[in-house]
Length: 188
Image (cartoon, rainbow, N blue to C red; front, side, top):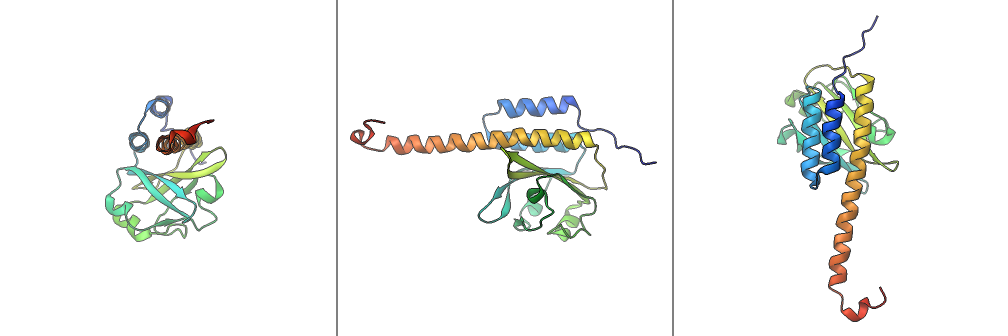
């Protein structure tokens, strides 16, 4: 009979990261805190967060913990397989990074010492805007509740990322309006 894996992501971890999500003003600090907290909670080799560039159909790194710069800059992470977490909208676990056709850079993963990986989509209002990846140096099995907790956190993170993007857009509009002659602003 198969034993269930132990939980690794408890309420204390969830509370700490939820608090960070709701209080951090700087998105980069938040993303790095989330990557570090996730790595530590799961005793993982590392964690990275990537956002989706829909025009180029690829993911770009915005934060990480425990992963070398060499691995991060191994090449573009293309969204091309219909089974990836970005395409399915569901978590995807890869048990063997060196022998799974979904892995784009198996040699780079081997050099980095990555054996397995969990990918969780970052969603906002039903749209997938990025992905959280947790990397392990050994085979790993996740408890279902841990995966659910990470999905909830990624949903919250998606809202923060969207809100940050809207705030940046509004700042650009304010700057643009501030440069217009006053006569053009009448009636606004």
